[in-house]
Length: 209
Length: 217
Image (tube, rainbow over all chains, first blue to last red; front, side):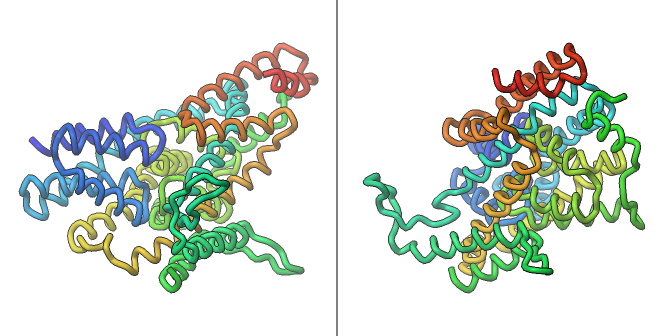
């Protein structure tokens, strides 16, 4: 039965999907495209594109869309497909829910134990590193555009027509960094919330890009 | 007397009940996480600036230090980073019920949006306007993640013995593709060992000894 299979597959993906959404995408691809043949490789590319273009964690987006597409390709009715995405989304979240509940309980109970404290003392500087790595890994041609055909004699595979896109991207990056970090001018403190900044960036993108 | 100031802080934190209990904490936390889920664009890390603004600064549901520890936990657990964080904060607020509410709040916006796209807008990804908006959003989101990196580096009280840790771990992940989970495991074990050596010394020497050990590693 396809619902049981969906549940089992996405529970597995939730349980072994380490390292954030992108790590999870390759797991989903292996299970959904190659093991179960619920969709074609082209369907899967659509999922990746749509997950990146919509808000929300990529794991949830792709599970919802994959559950829907899997049932649609097996010829099910539209509302049965909706049930499919419910099952896939629920089962991808379930392992997190169980594990995190156990861990939260343990953490809150033993938080002030000296051993736990020293473990976290060791972790804190690396969390800065994790965030730094996440920022660096997002500095890609896909996110910023790439106008460089070559740089320091190395071919970069860029397109000179991308220069305007690249300039706007860099300006948006700098503007967002300064405005959301906040700064003071005389008696005024200027700081913009991340949500407002996303809306502004979307509007600028619509007009300029 | 507690052995160091951090333990004292932790003890004080535990004795305080979650701050700012509003009209209905379940509805409030659901709506807050719904809002955060709605604007988390481009993966789990994009949630961090939103949590900083909404949950730490505005609602004061968890402290900044607790959030840093939580990020290490959420990153080393399987599953979706954003959902893991929501579950922990929910549990901190109102145990299991709180965790369920926050988990639902985070997952629901993306679920609804994707479902609508699957049902009605198959052509969504080919829409020029949508594509343009997202070309604007993506660099902004990268900056939104860069800001907490900067804030955290300032607040982590890095000294000359520990400043290399974030740089080396970022380079290992970025350039060599080392798994963040491995880095977290090593750092956790390292912290535990340093702490254990520290407790064998006189309490007053502890901080000093830790710095020496950190330097030797």
